[in-house]
Image (cartoon, rainbow, N blue to C red; front, side, top):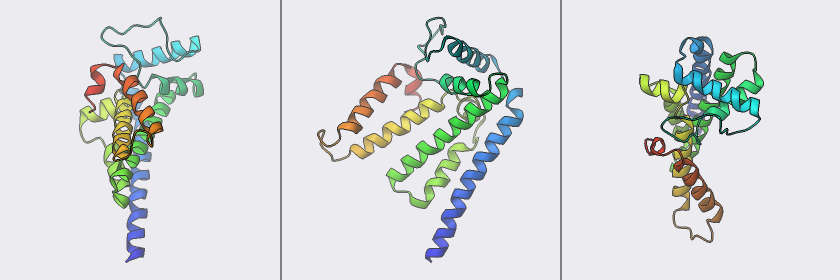
Length: 193
């Protein structure tokens, strides 16, 4: 019976890896054909911040929000690695974003005690179960960082549990920091909770 559970666990991890590779491959092959004004402006913003050598700039304004939590830093990293190929930079950022989502879901599932079902839950989060989810979470990365922060916050709250403030100092400090940081994004963060 133990070998059967081990085999199922290996298969669950295999499915997660296969779906991740498939989704990254699809985006790498077709992502440059799915570009709109929002995606383009994020890339231009990332390129500008790379030129300035900063993680934030005063030379870029959004009309409705303060962009503190965003995938732009992932695009910046992608543009540093692929400075002459924006499609590759975007695909790299998307791959990192999906990896981050999977890691946060795995942590969340572990805290919930889901055991060998954790990779299957992470797989579900990597699948485009609706067009909107595919666009804003997986391929556009627009809300991916917000989802990751929400999952980490939930993990910290669940871990805090019955511990006293004295014994949960680091978790509480991280929880407060993430709450303040994500709160700077305004209503966008509330959509993830």
